Length: 399
Image (cartoon, rainbow, N blue to C red; front, side):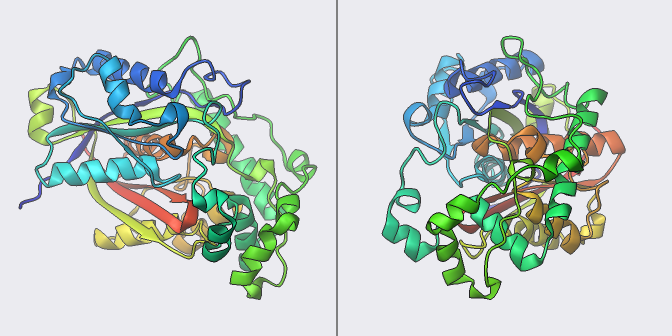
């Protein structure tokens, strides 16, 4: 078996909507979100869908409207033809970025020449934990695995790393300010496909201040007191007591969204008259302590950089899913990734986290930012529940 280069040829997404009945995408099913993006991809590229050899989408809650292999259903409804396969992938919050990584691996291995990866999540219609798996619903499994809520894990990490409430709030203000500025500059416009007039991430809160965040109560103290702290401290007694410092202003906002990334070889791109945007250099998957949980994305970044023979200093852009302020501050500290390189256009605390779609959105943002600043290397990464993490490293291509 040989390997060959694989490239990002196009990426697009919906705007991110509030993950509730009040959100601007609640009226559209997750299948319809994907169908609309698939049709937009063909319109944008002029691509014959007969050339596409597979569609792999990440979905974190595969039940109800997101069950029964949604990608296959959407592909049929989009009119791509019965010959185009589809498959769902679940690595929790890292599902979308893992869909990109696995599809790229298949292209490199000559299993595919041209394929679509991405993800979708309609939290407003298929709520978090609605698949009722034992990791969420079985008390014995929760106890034995240490399956705590992500917010409790975030507060545990903040406690162990010593991040003060003021530092967490400052990061929350920073990401909101960046996101508002990026939208004002038009940075996201080329990637976002308007749906029924909805074309802007609606969770961004311009004008967020330290004072407004300081007034917010801790978001996870009651959950901790109800038994989650005890599970966390049984695994990490060194914490002493968990200080609940995260609020809704320093936690990722839940969102509805979908995103697609078109991947292929240089030859496939030439045959379809498509430009090369970035080369997939490497990908890495890792896992860590399921109680600490949220550090796995950073570890995947370190792993993929080392795999490519690079150092953190070689990376021009880090797009890291903002799984709570504490994890972002630790990422920045450990990889010496300042505000200009890490999430330069804001992140999921400000714009929303649509579980299955987030990784594909971040990958697209990473490619766009590399072209904007003329950078060479970028990394997109996401931490998932139960201590999972995935990262993809890309290199800008001007062709």
